[in-house]
Figure 1 (tube, rainbow, N blue to C red):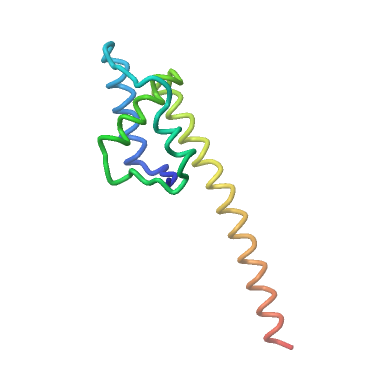
Figure 2: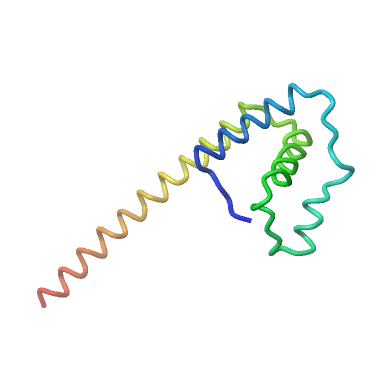
Length: 106
């Protein structure tokens, strides 16, 4: 399964949080059948079936009592970590460029 922290996924999850919280009659399946499927076959990919993946997300949102605040916090944390990582990569690239330049001067 691909970890998607794009703005479109964030909006999709926020919409699902709204749907779950506004639908008191949302029936989640007994147990987590999707997690069971994934543990049996980690290569399982149901991304092409939006209905199944949305049902999975709704189940997780309901089970974890996820709020829009939690979703926002998760995406903010991922964004902050991406920024730290990008800064580290930029520093490594700069250092590597300096080393290559020094080698060319030899």
